[in-house]
Image 1 (cartoon, rainbow, N blue to C red):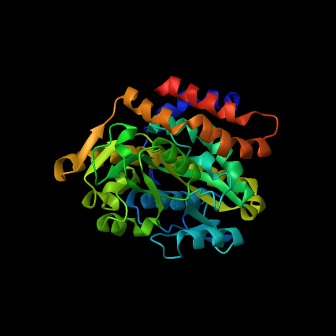
Image 2 (cartoon, helix red, strand yellow):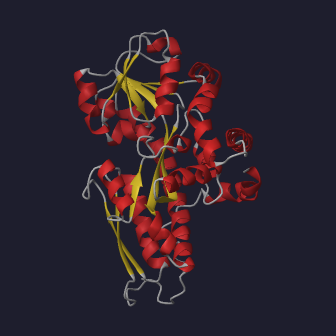
Image 3 (tube, rainbow, N blue to C red):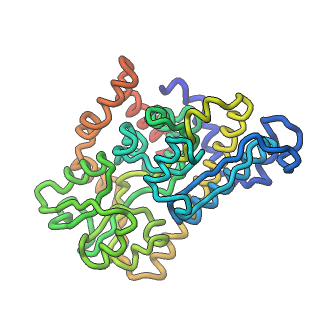
Length: 367
């Protein structure tokens, strides 16, 4: 897998520093109609792209993507973005996309929906925006490539990924400095089995219990003490106001929040090559824009937390993070959850070893 991505790694370090807007990105139009998306061409396709979430920066990036698809297709595609759950809940939108009732959406690769979805965000795999830029590079980044196969299995085409950033742990009990500090935590987890397994391993022997609570109910659950904490990026602390119902945040680097923008696979396969190229270029530009915007947010959100709240932030050293990573027993997580799916879909290629080697190589480049 590395041989397909190495040639793109160094240029990508420069690309991720760009903030791309529809105006700045409008230097070429791969569909070649010549009208530049002015609206004079009658659209051949009228699509909807949906989000069940209310996340400002991601929504802005998806709107950029929508505008670029319309522009790069020279008006042959007319797409409209529907954010904030207007077209349904996350799972409702997922099934609507499978059926072709909605053409595109941003979705989380939960394994109850996408059996190979754990490949998209295995704990302790991606920790920084530079690493994410390479791992999710379109089309040859190692995670993008492998996760694309997982989405195709459920009838969807992976276009690009929107990264909120690195997960830490917020809680209302105590500062989290070692795995022993998980003692007697009531901790919220989702349907992401790799994260659940990592948390179980880190909390083994501490009396920590894990509770599955829907994301939309989490604020109230922490406010009422149903759970003591959850994994979260800085964006969650502010956008979802978790800083109001917790007292401590540890920059653990537990995992990488990358939701996926996907489209109906049958629709993708029916498109002419020039429109596929237009959508791919829009995806590349939107992902670049999103990575840079969220990178900026991660600094601004942290500064706001430090200056405007009483939340105690714990910054772990690399050695201290390594203690958590060792306790998480990531080789076991990969072997039990990832390797069976990878071996089934990439027989004889030893994809687990390839992915881990690729990630080690990426970290050797950017740290």
